[in-house]
Image 1 (cartoon, rainbow, N blue to C red):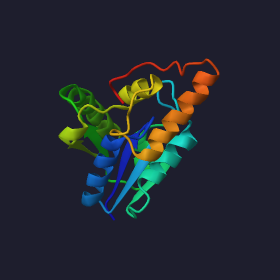
Image 2: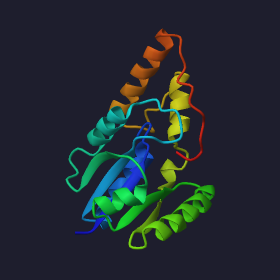
Image 3: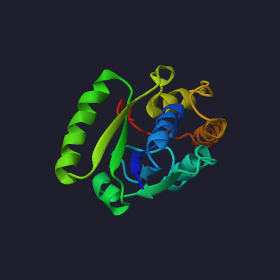
Length: 175
């Protein structure tokens, strides 16, 4: 079985993430959308919430499964018997970062390949950080995320605003 791992923080999952996973699922027998539990950024949604939203996004796609993971991504890939890591490329600046990460992962796990999939041009402008910022300020992100994610964002920001708190995350071009 040709298995791949698509690692991401998915905070929140958006149409660009979904597009990459669906395209990877046409290449591999199984794609594990691996939700990293401890990214180096402040999260809006818990690991459990991010996994649940991703599971909802891929319901009806039998060769895509969603699972949380910890630690080094290549170790997780080896643990689940994956032959490849899937990475999405959105803009040119992504390439340098992904290239360096791919080389480091190859050094750590020589049998794991890194497969980069270029995003569809209709998703070039989408990033989780942009979506969070627009949603926090009451903007419309319905064209960037599935309806259930849009609702989850509205609910989370309504809760935070009711408590007069801010998520306090930093904007990152890496998500």
